[in-house]
Image (cartoon, rainbow, N blue to C red; front, side):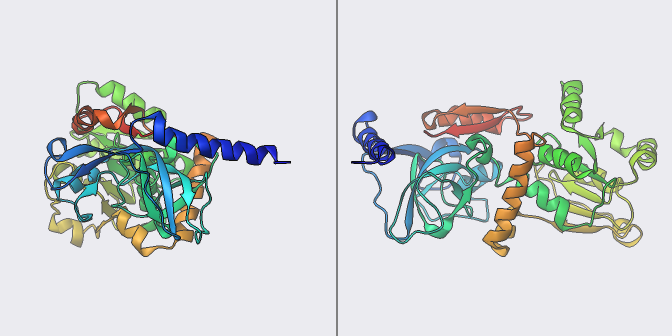
Amino acid sequence: SHHPAMAQLFTARALVSHAWRYGSRFASTCLRYTQHGNPRTVLSLVRSDDVPQIGASQILVRMIASPINPADINQIEGVYPVKPPLPAIGGNEGVGRVEQIGADVRSVNVGDLVFPASQGWGTWTTLGVANEGEMVRLPSDVDPLHLSMLAVNPCTALRMLRDFVPLKQGDSVVLNAPLSGVGQAVIQLCRVLGLHSICILRTRANLDEAKNQLTSLGASMVITEEASRSPTVKDGIKKSYGLPKLGLNAVGGQSCTNVMRLLAPGSTLVTYGGMSKEPVTIPTSAFIFSDIRFVGFWMAQWYKRHTLEERQAMNSELCEYIRKGSFTFPAVETHRLEDYEAALAKAAAPFAAKKQLFLLN
């Protein structure tokens, strides 16, 4: 008198273990590095016949998808502050499904979607073992591919809009690198929160196409780096939207100075990236006469300083926007781990139109 659902569950488990043994030649595949350097030379594809064994307070996670972010590349190069002990598996962000749990695990169940609670876990793997506190449970009704890109860019965007300046509806924000993952997230969240976004864009071959893309995401105004230096343009922004109270810089160098020039007195400029590899140079007058505050933001640091409850609240808010269709993700190009060299080359290309993503199972 077995319950049919139980029979199904046992069958599913049997099929999974059968697949491990016979479905593919290997139980798991990962991208591992034993030394720091150029990812395309130091990474290697490692396959294993063995299903990892888990302890009483551990979780076996079958990874579904993991993006390639600039921090992942920097980490493998050895120039990122978070350095997992070597040998290490690449990747910091991604989503997986809980395959098995140890006897003492209470925070997740088999079948739950999860992602790593902090950087350095190593997401470029088909199968991984985590301690209970290392995984955050996610809603089951949101596309896993979207969840795989939630922890870094959208969360960075939301925190920067919330944590530095008390913005109210109708206020404006100015940002560079608007087509980056964070940039696109900032523009959409500004629209959701009733804020105006002023985007400063590098001149490029397909400039009109890029401007149209940003406008369709909700950008209030898109100007080139050159135009941002014009007093007439600044006057236009002031008349239409009021000068921005918050500036967001992911580039550094001249581009950061351009963001700063458009800010209202008493504003805050947040630096969260340095894509140009040029330092942020601040004129003395910006401090004294314009009273502009210059601060930095690093999402990994926020995660260290805040509770799991605060994190869950942030995830829930973003997932609600995703469900409503008011928040979308950049177009993705998917790759198998085996094709990592091509995937990394595309991720490193300038003006990349698509996010590169490993599909892991």
